[in-house]
Image (cartoon, rainbow, N blue to C red; front, side, top):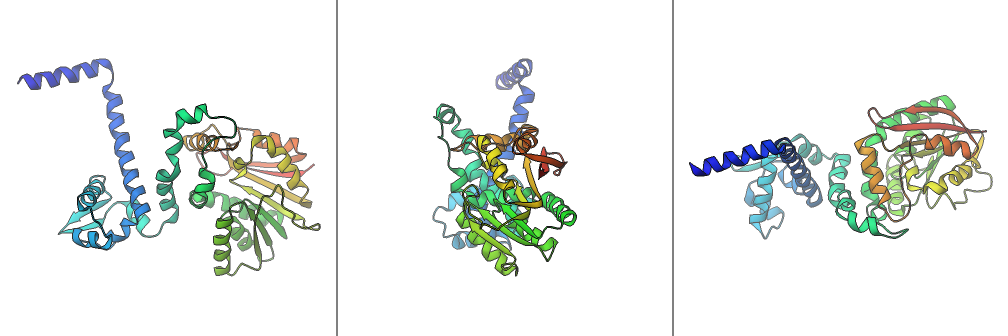
Length: 343
């Protein structure tokens, strides 16, 4: 009885202190975090594959060569409590929408959860040190996790693809330069939008370029899409190379703010007389996703950062471009595409 009264007094004190709502929200946040951590660890270890068709605990232990079965069982219990797996008739099976999509091969979803363990939490955990670090110091996530970052960035691909297809239909370019092409997703879209177009892509990440080349060969596009590993700021495309459309899609934020006007000027020199430059990017602030990405970028070694609202247009104008159009392309996000022509 005394114990119950003590608990009631504690609850009343919490309510009077105004913390009950905050604590309830914190519990909800924790559950979301646990689900994300469970799925992230499942992606990293590949354990969802062992659950796809239903397995007994003994089968899972054997397939994963598990030596600490108490840890495996505890991990499975987490998955069951968050609703991503279930246990019935002596077998574990996938249950949640997220887990089933990952097991079915959704690479974007897999990259999203893998990135949480790989680099998304790092800047927050290291904040104290990052705030005291010197100029040029910071994390190296952009290099260490280039392949995962390239996959995660594809979340905006359907919206950019729709916009890009429309631009190609309107401008009918013969030659396209895809700057920071990454996995070559937009190079492929550009080549598919018009059979007559030829695309040149360039990206700093050599490993990503190698994988993209293999993908293009498999798609039968290797002759019309040529990829190069290198830095556009120092790349020599050939004295007669001129492009009708140059793309900077979802990557301008990797270039330091102080270098973007010079970058646009260099790209302007590669345009044909009727050519256009398209720059598409999130701007910050404006949404949780934009603020989070901008924070992670600023924590990297170097000077990466999302453009501020209006900055794309201002820098392009300073580089001698006229603005041909500005369009929001991702619903609910401050993601815009700017088309520019040389003045």
